[in-house]
Image (cartoon, rainbow, N blue to C red; front, side, top):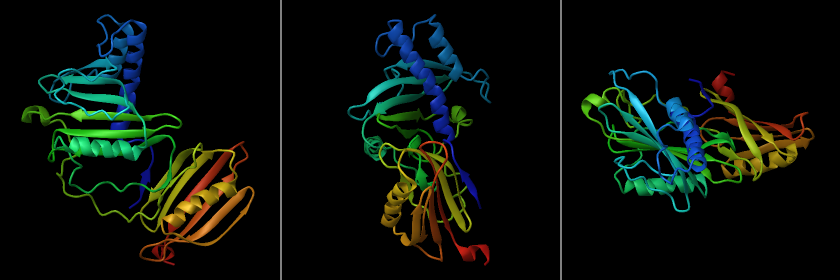
Length: 320
């Protein structure tokens, strides 16, 4: 089986769209005198537009409708859940979703200092106190290879059982700025309200099919280097990660930097060379089988643009 990796998860993508509106609403509150934690005043055209953009204009399958309320710089009042806020964070705002005859859910966006692992650890600890823990179902394999400087660094889900409620946390790393953290809270619902609402905590349908073991370690860019994933694949006898870096560092410097991470992950260097515009190295990949690896860095004609590829493959897996 071959799976293409790329882009954000559906939940993270929804939050990106939703909180564009939240950030607009925050500006509205500043410009038009909204107090901290206040919902946009009735008749506020820009706030109404932002709310309408994230509220579905069509009814749910059960015929219910949904409205949203924006809360700049505050969590929704009486939302039924006290969301923990990491120390030193800035609460940009929240969005309350109210569906007919159902308990309200909400999304929140925060600027949180530190690294992505610190943010995840905070929520593991604090949500655990509320009985919300990672689901006891096999998790999707975390993709290895080049880790983009832009995009979600961490995505976590915390459940109470295999249904509702649940909390999802997405952490987006940003260069020279605090992490952009998006949190979604989905409350428990009555049986009639829940029948059209799924949960990532559900174990229905049985465990997912077995996945090929991850052969590519996660590779992170040097400080100050913008790294953008341009594609990845895994499955069968080959796994590959491609990326583009914007930096004045040479191909040889980048190859050496990433090679250190490969060695730390247990890869054994076999050979390599650097002669601008190309630098490469070949590797013995740890684990069962005869897996081999190659790292290639190429200086592109465009100024400060570098193309990168990391591949691991098993020759016998191809039948030769």
